[in-house]
Amino acid sequence: MRIGAEETEQHRSVGDRMLLILDTVATSPGEVGLSELARRTGLKKATVHRLALDLVAHRMLERGAYGYRLGLHLFELGQHVPASRRLRATALPFMADLLTATGEVVQLGVLDDTDIVYVEKLTGQHSASVPSAVGTRLPAYCTGLGKAILAFSDESAVERVTSAPMPARTGTTITDPRHFLRELAKIHDSGIAYDREEGTRGIACVAAPIVVESYVGRDGHRAVAGLSVTGPAHRLQPARLGAAVRTAALSISRLLGYPLH
Image (cartoon, rainbow, N blue to C red; front, side, top):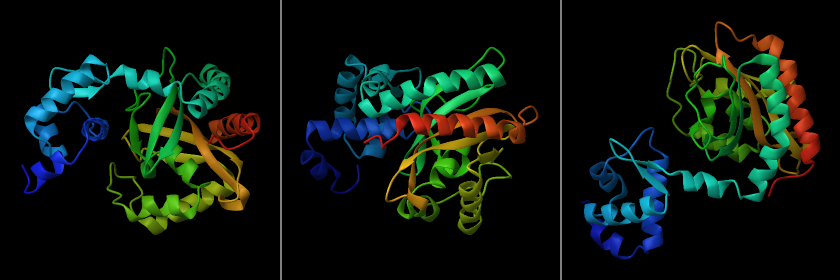
């Protein structure tokens, strides 16, 4: 244990320690073993084990073959958040139309700090497998959804992303902040963002922002979410799909009408 970690643990409430465990599991790409969870949280292994058992009992965590992952009860609770529920309910009919028209994966996401969190996902019989699921998160800088939202976000949100590391995930990932800002300016002008295999090799995406009137966004508008169509790069036709995704996002924006606070 790190020096001072035991004293720090003593000053944490049980709730704080549980949230620390949940946050640590949430930011991990896969399951997290007990020892690794203790190391990353700075908590005693016995403490982590005891609290993890309680979280599993309440379905906040699930025990897998290699460690812990988030439980379904967290997702169930999330569905009761008014803003999220209204956003999903408004967007779902338009997402279904896009799925019928394209046959590709249709996704709805929101920005959380420097990540995109996927809040809804529709797939068809012939949709490709993509590295996202409802409740998971990916870096905003290398996703179509992330770029679409950031192009209509305040400067502080953009700065959080560009001041953080932007490692290359593929050969086409934009890693230079200046290049990234130029990309956002183009997206703001067109209302359409593209992921050119920037997050996952072989997967492309076209996305558009869902915006509301606001005093803090660019040109008086702020993105509250993003809508995208994702599929294999060799099959997806971004230029053809861009107008349809943009039209659907604008329709959702009009129906929402005000910020989802």
